[in-house]
Length: 569
Image (cartoon, rainbow, N blue to C red; front, top):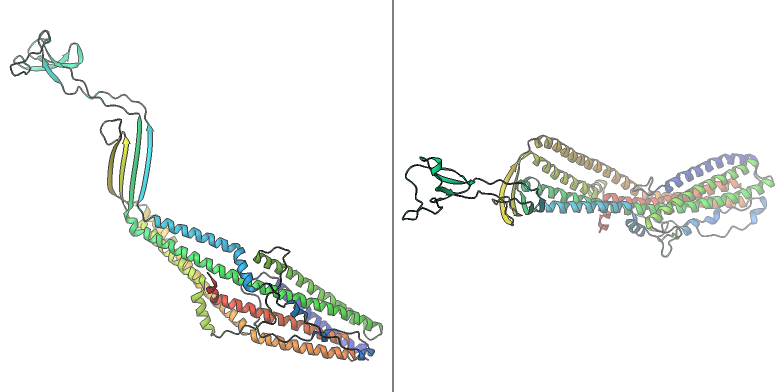
């Protein structure tokens, strides 16, 4: 028989054990409940699965001096291995990753960016062609009065007093010898008469200059015009168009690489979310087993207390263990709810769709440590990571755009040609009511002096943007180096972490078996069994975290090094 004094001493050990168990639950549950990220908080490396520990040894029996002859409980299957066993048609990391590529909104945003960049390339290509402009106009003009332009060319005739022409033998008008002059005819002010300058006005009636009508122009009130203009930007071919097309092409290449990089990131995030979901499912199972065991021990403790073999304080501590285990279980279930929803979002699955595992996480072969040295992995990442290449293309694009901006320092030289088919045509003298075609061609040089100052400021801005991208690329190189080192260290310690967890679980299971036998023989208290079960629970959680962490570390290393780039189609 054990006295209550040693039992009280064991209670101190129980309190520390329970505190460790609660701390483990509080740490593991939030980490599993976080959304999937490219780098989990504590990925553990992977190793071969151990043989399932004998959980039957942890099943307590009612204590008492008379239980020495009781038979041990029959072995049962490991609930953790059962819950995480592969099911036909269950989910796999690759399946979740492919589904995430169809549902991720950030990928659709990158695809829209790529389409916009491709459209800019088409726009830059069109700039190589001369600009052809077709114009059709109709104009209604107000009516105006057009005066006659002079008297026109005179027609000379000499007539006698009867109005008959007086001509010589050659048929030419005959004039009286002497000087001649002109004067308005008496009967028509717009006609001119030839008079003898030496005679008086009364004797001038028989000589006149016949009337000649004045020149008048018609006035058009309807104007129609069809014009075709061709402009050839000669200087832009040298300073702007080629550089603009190269800039747009590099920008499109950068968007393609960004889309591929986002695709790989989405796939890696989905795989890590899947593994974290598995981790949380396992934590729920382990926490549920801990609750069941704690409740069973409370019942045993109450019966032992009734026969005077256990103090009231020990019973209360066991009840506190039940409350703590239930709290851990509630937190794990809440984390599982979040992880389930995250997987459903990635899959685009309905809330009522059952989610089952398609891989055996606990029984799968662990990932091997990387065979390459760390410097080689860093160089591989710098060469293969698409984010670096995307920034390279962006930098090339900005450099070409900077060259286009500097073209503002120089004058423009443009060739032009116009073909006009108009009624009336302004280049044809007289407003005739008919269509006439005319053309013109030439070269025009333009230099806006103020553009020199605006170009200087624009060039400085373009250069600053180029420098900014170059510095972003340097910062990304440093960040990639740290990611590689982190993933490398996590995967390197995977084997030792899993091996340590397996040995700890085996030792904890054997310790629980021995203490349970001693408990049945009356040589140990339920506190001893609770301590052993707490060790088994912690060992199972460590085993689960080690195996899942190893899978996460392998996924991260493949992504940060760029080995998953081959998966991009």
